[in-house]
Length: 202
Image 1: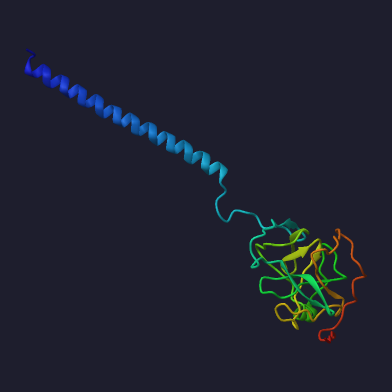
Image 2: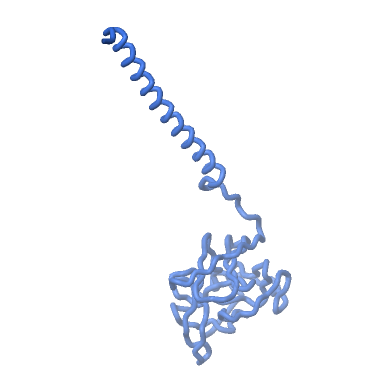
């Protein structure tokens, strides 16, 4: 028969060993969590740390194909009496390009821009198009372009209705719009014009 004090000592030692085992397991778990946290902190950028793009920077936009609420998508509508597939914005307004523009410079400003508002978006999406949708940081902000052509709406239009075709050198944008490269344009840039010097009819 063991002495009572020896029995108490053995029980006490076992209890301490058990507690030590729990502490060790907890410490090991904490180390693992800390290690995982460290890995996550090095692979995941914190919110709001993306630097602003410099002027003239072009960013490609991933195309989505599941919604007509996209910044740029297509509809079929009448253009000069013929049904065509045209690009429209999220509200259904037809989108146009301006012939004097280049792939990096918009020549639409002042009163012209009030009639032909540039399409701008911080995070544009696209659907139903095969061309390249991009965003160029310029004087208008993040201006959306299609195959290198800056896009605009027209103040005289309503959703799904094209009324600005071939007005003031603006033409409706279609999915097959040819690509324009940096530094090129289809016509010479217009001479500066005084405010209110533009007119249109449709």
